[in-house]
Amino acid sequence: MRIAINIVMFFSLIYIFCCNNERRITLMENGLVIEDILEGNGSEAMDFNKVVVNYTGKLEDGSIFDSSLKPGREPFAFTLGVGSVIKGWDLGVKGMKVGGKRKLTIPSDLGYGDNGAGDVIPPGAKLIFEIELLEVEAY
Image (cartoon, rainbow, N blue to C red; front, top):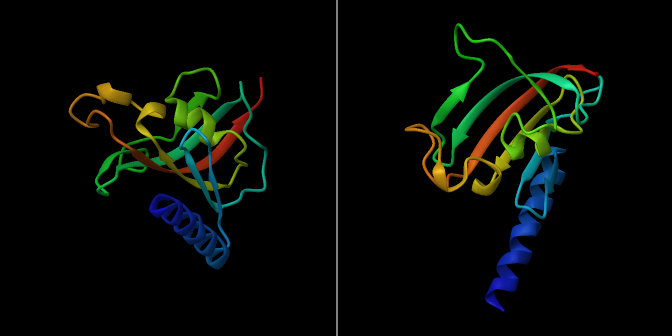
């Protein structure tokens, strides 16, 4: 019973937050949370498109582990839906429109899993990315 109450409270808080801030939040069955911060109005990113993004990646404690916005860095380009990035990115960037900004909260199994990534991302880490879609190029 207590678990059911916690689940109802969790979804109620998501609903309240979503409605008060006019942000769309989607909780996927696989645990990925997609929060549209700003909906773009340009081309929509679909599988097999080359996309260009700016991003900042954080751990749950708020520490930044990577960002394309650091001095000397460039926006990041990749082909969507072909596994060239972590699964959470392939799923979370799909459907964005150019000019849009999203926050992705990515569970470990859609990120770097039990292995982590070097000394930067610990094993089992949940990842939080803020992503801005700059370009979409269809092939």
